[in-house]
Image 1 (cartoon, one colour):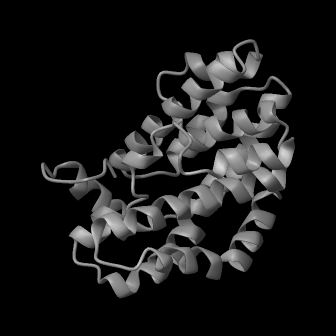
Image 2: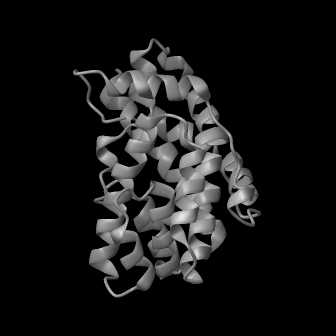
Length: 219
């Protein structure tokens, strides 16, 4: 059942609102990034945003299993996300995941705590779902990373003229890197140990995008 849960959580059709987000790709392209740079963009995101979110999800999973303080994990994640627009996007996705969890596991104590949060961050919500769904730390990290990269890859054909096969290759080429980042994420021991990697240009683009009136994705 656990491998199936990981596949379901990584499915782009999961009804948590991911279709309305591009993992920062639309802001990047609107700011003038060339389409040929998208693979490099994904690498940069994997080692910054992805690394922080994977470690946060792993920690949230452990805290959910021990009935610890999920708010402490959320605060630690927020402190590592400088862009208000990026934090808002994470909260939107977190609320979608919390809604899904509330429908599937309404009696789980950690899900009730998550549902009561006014602004649950995406990796915190994902960690809670991973806990109640029976995922391991490594599965949690890998799925979090894949979901973020696949969100950007799936958005690409909607934003530029490109063969839809290309985004599949981009993500596949990062398989080994995803495994390395995931393996690093599971070494986290507490909130103070969460990585503080950031990509200032990505965060600037997300802030600029929040003020645009003509856009396809929230972020």
